[in-house]
Image (cartoon, rainbow, N blue to C red; front, side):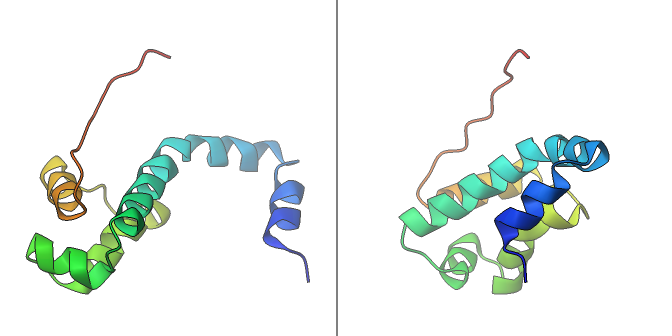
Length: 96
């Protein structure tokens, strides 16, 4: 059985895969930041849900929404999440 890295290395040889992978980089970066912030705060999804006034499955969906491409979270939701994990949401436009 191949490891994740071995599979990724193999897939990265395919131009179509690389294009799709690169297109998702910003979304993955956002959700990685969210998970890192929650873990740094020492909180579980249930803790964050309580602080946000929602249910645990909603936080799980929020943290996974980038992988499922079903919807993008609103700014208000991202602000609630940031506050729940003891952070401030900072959105910037960066020239390419």
